[in-house]
Structures are given as C-alpha cells and as structure tokens.
Length: 369
Image (cartoon, rainbow, N blue to C red):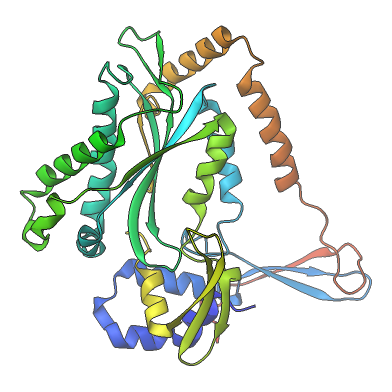
C-alpha cells in the first residue's frame, strides 16, 4: 500500500529544495515526523518467537497530529474524557465557513485568522442565543477547526456541537430551544461577518482583503445531530482525521499522485490526480501552526463552568425521568474501551506461537531510505 510517508521520502527533498526557507518550520517538522513514523529512525521493540525463532520488529510512532498513522486510537480516548460533559438534550451541529477570498489571506496568516474564526463565531452565536426571541440564556459550544475539502483544497471552517437550549440567568432554569430550530442562520451569518470585519479593520492585512468580501453572504449552516454520545461520536472524526488517510492514496509515480475521494453531492467515489509537488503543497497547507489548539470550549462547556455543567446535567436527568444517561454512557464507553485497549498476545505470523518480548531497538535518528 502506498503511504503519505512514501511520497515524502521520494519527493520531499525536491519540494524542500524548490521552496527553501519559504516552508514554515511546522511543515518541515510534519514531513520529517511522517517519514520517520514507525521506522528504525524512532527506535522500537522486538518480539521473538520461542517456537520458530522468527523476530518481529515494532517501531515507535511519531505522534505528530498530522500523521495518518497516529490518530486512530485518539478519538476513543477523547470520547472517554468528554462523557461527563453530556447533557440529556438534543444537539445541533453549527458550521461557520470563511469565504474563499478570505481563505487566501488565512493561509498566510493562520494564527490570526483561525483564532478570530473561533472567537468571533462563538461570540456571535452566544450573542444571538442570549436573545429571548430565540433561547434567552447561556448556551454551551464545543468547536473544532477543519481546513480541507475532499480533494485537499483549502476550505477553513469550524464545527460546533451545541445543546438545544441554554441556562437562564437564575443559574438553574433550563430554556429548551424550539424543535429542530436553534438560531436563525441568516441573522447569525450577518452578525458573524460584521464582527469579523470590525476585528480586521485595524490589522495590517486588512488592505489585502477584497472589499466584496464584506458585502457577500457568509455561509453558516445548522442541523440537528441527535443527542449525547451520538453527537460526540459525530464530532470525533472531525477532530482526529488528518487531511488524507493512507488508504485513500491509490497510485504514486515520478510525477503524479492519484487518490480517491467521495463527491459531496452524489456520494459517488471519484479519483483526483495531482502533480507530486501540488499534492504535497495541498497537504501541508492543512498543517496547523505549532501548539495551535484546534478544539475549543465556550459558554457552559468552558473549563471554568464545569461544576455548573455537572449540576445542570444532574438536574436535567432528574426532571426528564429517564435512565441516567451518564451512567449508560459510562458503561458503553467502558465496554468500548476494554475492546480497544485490551491487548491480545502478539502471535507469530509464521507459526502462531505467542511471541516473547525481546531487546529494544535504539533510535537511529536517520531518515529511512
């Protein structure tokens, strides 16, 4: 199977030579880590079969958040940590998307634009939700940044999971949203655009933004996604998915990369072929700045309000007179955790005997050929 690491090993140096010091350090680090992931460069562990003496080498992972090999188990861990934040109410998925013209500026100023995208979309949503015509209380928001489309094009947007309701000013009364309706998206879109415009007016990049950006409609989408654990499971892939997984890469030659994707409208599987340099460029533009936090919490979900959130959850469970959702969630997640984390003995691929732990493999520090 062709892997992203193979593309970087074969063509990465040519890409680095072409762009030199124009490549951000975060991009260089991602390329290096992905190349070394699960190779002798990072060291590892050996296992020896007592029956046929076959030796199995297990190399360490790079743990880079952009590596397609290192994200598979993280979604389950995240679900386990988030289970105590669940409220026994319906949820909505709210999505804010930057216009294409602003996206071009965002690519070169990621820290600024991504932080504004989070801060302003959350502020606009909370402002509108506080209006008594809609909810009239404090809502909770759990957001994740997503920057790519299906063909790796640059498409920055943020997804929020939002409970269908809010907490009244008295701190105890739950104000449910209307059925299948959270907030008016047209009004939210205009508020989002206006706040973004105001925030950028005093920034040095403001002249680079075409004036038409502030007159066109900005896309805000809202849809119901169920409740509780189901909503978290819906969001988890957005958090831990990387721009492209290895199983989507179909072909690599001296000049081109071919990968598969699923068309948004029809759901049909299609193929995209790009020059190697363009493929690497498209992938790397989704590498986030170092230490950038791509999952953020606002309102009732903010860390400083976790005690209030716990009390609210208990109150809602009591008044709903249904089985304790948190307990059911705990049991469900514990079952999944035991299935995911219980390690079966490693068996020899030759004779099926249980393999024994062997000596460590010392990291070479050298990139694989």
